[in-house]
Amino acid sequence: MSKEIRIFSPATVANVACGFDVLGFCLDTIGDDMVIRKTEGKGIKITKIEGYDLPFEPEKNVAGVSALAMYEALQPDCGFEIEIYKKIKPGSGIGSSSASASGSVFGMNALLGNPLNKTELTKYAMKGEALASNCEHADNIAPGIFGGFTLVKSVNPLQVLQLPTPSDLYATLIHPQIEIKTSESRAILPNKIPLQNAITQWANVGSLVHGLHTSDYELIKTALNDVVIEPYRKQLIPHFNDVKSSALSAGALGCAISGSGPSIFVLSKGEKTAKKVEESIRSAYSKTDIVFETYVSKINTEGIKRIDD
Ligand code: HSE
Image (cartoon, rainbow, N blue to C red):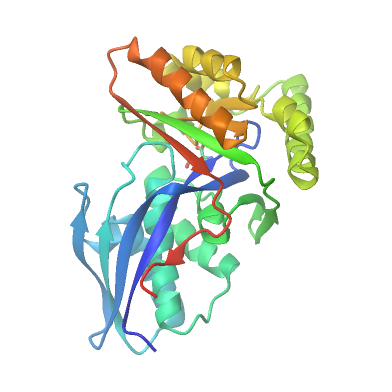
């Protein structure tokens, strides 16, 4: 069995418009690399972090916290070193903390001969994610670990459903280079919502899930609508409405905040439309003075993976 593995831990889009805290999907062109190494000495050490300035103390680092949770539960007869090559900017809204939290447990599990299944890995990764957002939710972690679209049916007990990915679905993302902390964008949300909004939202979640199962792009289009969270959070994202209207005019199926923002995701049918959407939102955002990046990505149905074999 190998002593060291290198992995790719992908970025993810949580919420998917109507599915706050339950729906998510996995991206394939953006993600972190991590190296996990088995050591004879016991314990968890973070030995290298490149890309962003993050804490090396395992109990203060999301990758370390999830690793410690799994380590304490399994009590293996070895230790682990973790190297993080961070490419997903923290606070970007595309699952930066969950990619790190998932990467360490995925790597340790592989080095131990895969004693844990994907749901169990998700459970330990959630411990790390909780450090970043002050609350345990798995809508970024589950799609990274399972791949494709996922629905977190419940957190306690943890139950993750893997949903089908229509083959012609593409994501376009824009990441305005401002930071929004998940904890802060959760703090602005109301505790109660009007019944009519709840009815619209759960009708959309059900329709989106049905649309994914039946590859019904028209149904997906009408279901990608968030009447509960977006009205509050869009105020934190400069020019959100301009991005949304330019994406929809370019033929997108839907456009909404990615996770807790500031990234905005768009889903389109076909790569050609996804690229046209990218051009359109680039042109809209170029009129602002905010630096931004855009990406086009197929939905990644594989999820987190080894990249050394
Ligand atoms: N569902 C979470 C939120 C995702 O929107 O706050 C970000 O961690």
